[in-house]
Length: 338
Ligand SMILES: *Cc1c(COP(=O)(O)O)cnc(C)c1O
Image 1 (spheres, rainbow, N blue to C red):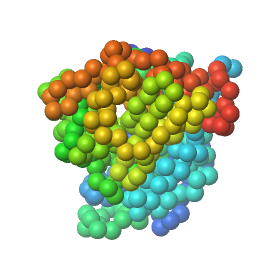
Image 2 (cartoon, rainbow, N blue to C red; image 1 turned 30 degrees about the vertical axis):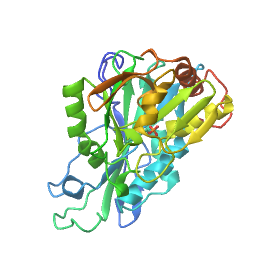
Image 3 (tube, rainbow, N blue to C red; image 1 turned 120 degrees about the horizontal axis):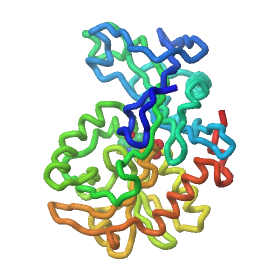
Image 4 (cartoon, helix red, strand yellow; image 1 turned 90 degrees about the horizontal axis):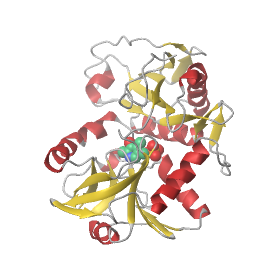
């Protein structure tokens, strides 16, 4: 069991399960002990590659409590594939999908009792770091690695549950660079930090929506949607932003529900016009489906619809969470029961 703190009253990501799976990589070969072990501090040489040259990436997925008491991981194989993609973009040795998959399952089985009731979940944080001891390796990838599957019981990402968010739109500073748009690597989040802190201080914004030269992509950790009766729109995929698994799930489910689905470029002007009667929301494993009530462009506030979560947003959120928590059918095979 994790310590006895309550995931619903503790900040997201601050409680850790006491079992972890780890594998060590050396020259392309990964060695996994084969079972979960007690969570313990890492011992790292001060010259570790990841600490100096940013050779680190992660994934984020969830296991949800099912009505029969079992636990199901949501879209496991899609997260495994994206983790492999992130690792490859760091030029680290990419483990076999089967190994990553097994290590995630073994960790979740070991920590299954920690899974909170819905809408809580057991958050799974696969992590990879380059461990070569070499401060001269700025221009070479780490030849050795450490991979682990850390688990954290979580409640709601946004304290206070579903409440409409305020987004500050940033049109000059980009979130990241083209070669790092599709990777979940620490560098991206620290790059977005200054802009985000400024927006929180100056506009009491919850998040920043990055829209370089008016071209909307995503926020610091969530994808972006416009929706209204019968129609849903999101940015088309390219290398500039993270390809969310939640984003893909929502597009599939919206199609199933009869929405006209478009993936195309989106401008800030279109967002402002959409606010007149339309709905805006963010998506991500942590945020789930998070309604947006206000956007701030050049210091100017615009209310989206009536500023409250809209019916289409709530319908899509319910469709997603009911597949995750096992109260709806799973026509696309997204649940892996462990
Ligand atoms: C993780 C993440 C998302 C959401 O991806 P999901 O697979 O839906 O969790 C979106 N944007 C960024 C930058 C992210 O790190």
